[in-house]
Length: 113
Image (cartoon, rainbow, N blue to C red; front, side):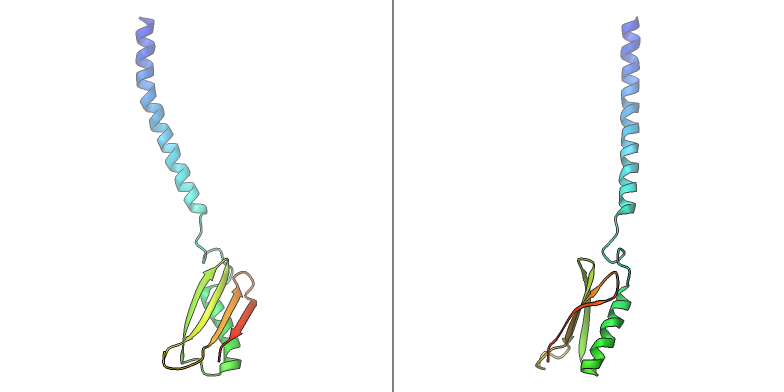
């Protein structure tokens, strides 16, 4: 009789144990996702701030920036901002910047004319 009781207890307890393990696993997965941030969220300066920094510098060298399309992307926690000519028939190019995502400092710049 004791053996039967023990077997029934195991049979009842085992699924309950698995159920609890799955719930804990789910909670851990939810908690882990809250700590994952996108590249933009981990930066201290926003895209708009980086674009404004680049624009202020570019206007000194180029004055009129309306002929350029501006592209900004994050790589390795820095903003890469490129001014590309809108008209493909024009020759030359615009300024290209690498701006620190944490300080807003211009790390590098290159002018194409």
